Length: 241
View 1 (tube, helix red, strand yellow):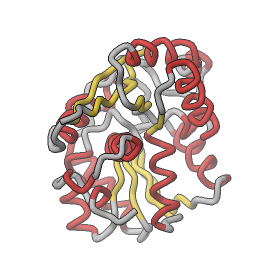
View 2: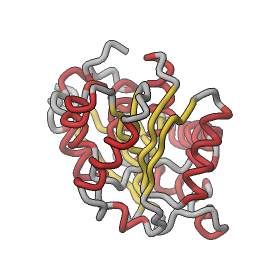
View 3: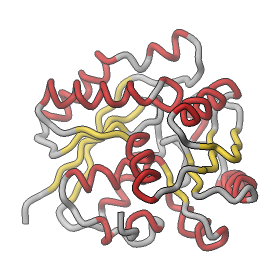
C-alpha cells in the first residue's frame, strides 16, 4: 500500500490540533500526519501578533515538511479569518511554488464546504477577543456569508485556548444554534472541539464544522483519499460534497 503523508503547519503554542489530527487520520489505512511548527503565541490585532503570520517563517516550516516528501501541506490555522482570505490563497501559492507540494488551509476548506453545500448563514464559536471576532464576521460578510450568531471567550493567549472546557464549548454551540444557522463552525485549531462534533450534531440537528476537521478533510481530498472512512468525526466526512 502506498503511504499518504500529510504535512501540517502548526502554531508553536498549539496543543490541540496534533492529537486530534492524528486521531482522525489513524482511521484511514496508510495515512499519517507530520507536523511543522512556527512561532505563534498570541492572537490579537496588535502589530506583534499580526507579524507572527508573515510569510517567511511559515515558508521555512513548510520547506522542512517538504523534506519528508509529504503529499500535501495544510495550514491548520485560522489567521486568514481576521487577516483576509487572500492571505491563505497567497500562502498556498507560495508553498507550492517553493516546495512543489500542493497546499491548502483550514479556513479556505471551511469556505469551500459552505459553498459546496449552499450554506451561507453560519454560527461562529471562537476563543478570540472582541475586535478579532468582529474582524472575522466582517470578512465573511464582505465575501457574502452571514454570521447569524456568535460567541467568543475573549482570550488572546494561544496556549490558553486549549484550556476552554468541553462544557463551555458545548454551551456556546447551543447558544449560537438558537439562531438556526445553516451550520456552526468552531473557528480555532487550538480548541479541543473536533471530537465533540457528532454529539452536537445529534443534539442540535445542525452541521458543525471544526477547523481542525476541515483541514484534514481538505488535505485528504487533495490526496485523493476517500473521506468516508472517518466515522465518528461528524457528518462532513460522509456528506456527498
